[in-house]
Length: 223
Image (cartoon, rainbow, N blue to C red; front, side, top):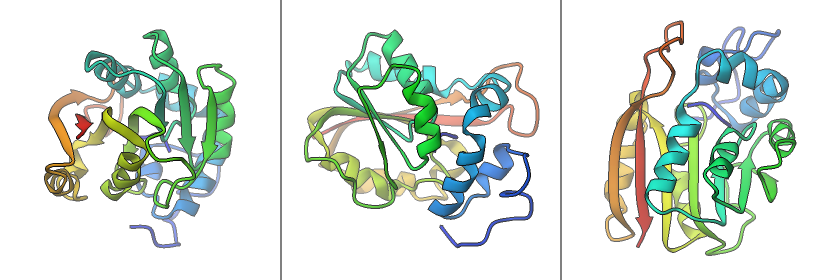
């Protein structure tokens, strides 16, 4: 579910035809919406979105994870087509596993040879992963409206070792309104070295209403 409430209906045009864009992605409401939307977008996502919008989040968050000393095994949360995995691999970090609700997006990611394993799962539910299985978690564009809320971080903390690194992006428009700020405050005592830093999600050449969108780089460790 890579883009930086769940009711069953979807907005006009969001789930029909060949048009896929940020407005459609932000309008998703249920896990089923995401499965359908990204199934049809998987093979075109890199070119139609990541390249066209000069999507910076994957490389930015991989750099943040590396800077805090993050190591493998690391779980790429909402791995999508594997852009974060590629950035981690370029930084020499691994092994990398990817998890996403879209099997079709993960199939594209698997072709990039950055991942040890990929897991198709709904991040809003208990995960089929062992306690303390990872040295860290990383995510770009998944924690946002219509995708995954802050509550999913409880499961990610469970599967991460003590001292493990977290580096995730959260869209600035939803950091307060979707409860991320309050949730992080509620983790006092369970996390350490908490930091936030703003960044521009898309490059200077990005066009459209979202071209100047800002996100937060959120980093911390499991205490």
